[in-house]
Amino acid sequence: MENSILVNFVMLQVAAEQAESAPATLDPWTLVIEASPVVQLVMLMLVLMSIGCWFIIGAKIVRLSQATRSSTKFLDLFWGESGAAWNAERLEGVYAQIKSFEGSPVASVFRAGYVELARIAGDSAPAGGDTENIDRALRRARSNEFNRLENYLPFLATTGATAPFIGLFGTVWGIMGSFIAIGNAQDASLATVAPGIAEALIATAIGLVAAIPAVMAYNYFLRKISVLESEVNAFSSDYLNIVRRHFLAA
Image 1 (cartoon, rainbow, N blue to C red):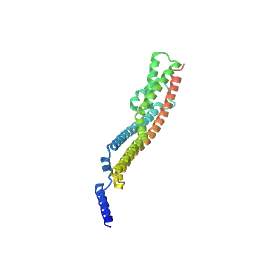
Image 2 (cartoon, rainbow, N blue to C red):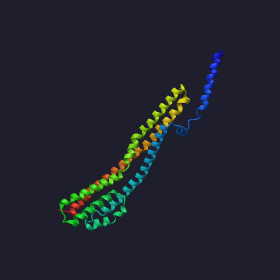
Image 3 (cartoon, helix red, strand yellow):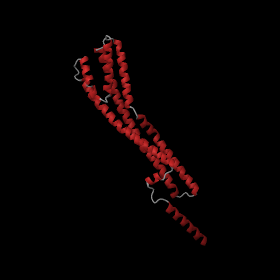
Image 4 (cartoon, helix red, strand yellow):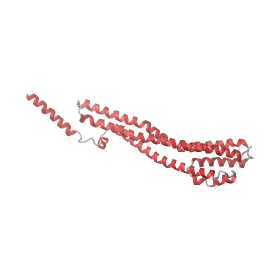
């Protein structure tokens, strides 16, 4: 009987010591501060990736909005009155206002085509084969414009694809640390296991917070760029047809 009372007393004392040593609440910030160095490094990496993604998202929203708005205004200027005759004066008038459409991929493609057309007209008599040079200039301008529009988008794709796995690595490492603590203390109580598991789950949460906006923004920007690309390709074909019919007819 006395042995039983003594055992119960020891167990209560141990439980009281564990309760005193365990944190009163599992505050997320405290868990981050007290996390293992590896988990902290994972969290820092994910936070930096998330900050980088949001910077790119903001910059791309501004850039694509400007490109869409400027391209619409330029196309309105270029086509003007549908019945107006296509001649050198009309193209020169459009080219004279090209600086008003900074950021428009359509305007940049027109600039490249106009400069090449002016070079050909000044070098030799018009010939049907010269349209190949203009076509090449238009394709090069299109490629340059869309390379600029797609800058940094791979970072969004990379973050969306890897951030959950980086967070998962932090989770696995944190849980592994919890099991090591259990083995060292030979105690599987919730107070021993909870902090390590909680900090591990925080790493997963940060990974998802970084990945989800990155994936959504990446898909949205690809759609916007695809629409702009269709407009630029259509304009490039129309411009080349105008040049063939009215300026470089064989």
